[in-house]
Image (cartoon, rainbow, N blue to C red):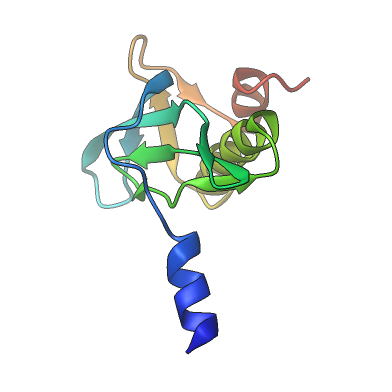
Length: 118
C-alpha cells in the first residue's frame, strides 16, 4: 500500500498553474480530422523540499502530472523535455503537425529548433 500512496503523491497537479510559455499546432489525424493542439509550460513552484513544473499538450494527452526536480531549473528543463519528446514521438510515428499560423507541415528538425536544439 505504501508504494501506491507514493505513486499517487507523485501524480500531483497544482490547480490553476501560472502559464509561462505556449505554442500552438494543428494535428492532422490519420482519420482525416484536425485537432487544435497547444503545448503549455507552467512556472515551477516549491513542493516541500523539491520543485515541480506543470506542463501539457492540450488536444493530445492533456495535462501531465507536474514534473518534479531538485531545483526550479531542473523541474522546468524536465517538463520542457517531456513535451519535446512527446511531440517528436508523434512525428516519428507518422502523425502530421502544422504550425497553426502558417499551415506548414513540421518535422523532427523543427521540434529540435523550437526547443533550443541544433
